Length: 191
Ligand SMILES: [Zn+2]
Picture 1 (cartoon, rainbow, N blue to C red):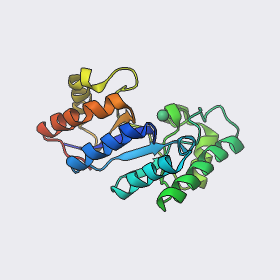
Picture 2: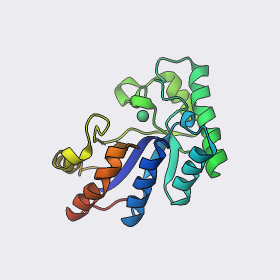
Picture 3: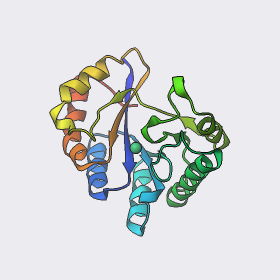
């Protein structure tokens, strides 16, 4: 059985949801990845929130500055989106991200890799990263679809690592404890 990795996109706002998510992860001793947008790091409070993600042992990774699609941008525009985000995250946490998840995955799908996105990822030593299970938590709360998520996770168990995509949302924070309990009950481990 492969290991699971939870990933949370589009932080650090809303920070109340982020705080709840961090508490639940700590309760379960689960380490996760957070793909944040620099445009949301617009105050001392939101920068401190990103620092807190890092201090709790999670990885803060690059989700581009403004959450616009990168695959339609020029090389220089992509570079700006990635570079600004690298710098603001490093300033907040002391660590440069090592992964880039382009907004919407646009430009990072193996069958439609975007030349500019690939080039900029290489320039900054970033691994392009998608996910294996999409909870679609932005469409409807995870509390209404635990069985669907568990069955999607089960279907990926030929893989060493299954990345489960969620977002920093209040609905997701509300359903997260139960989701982790259900995954643990099935014997899954987080890595
Ligand atoms: Zn996103």
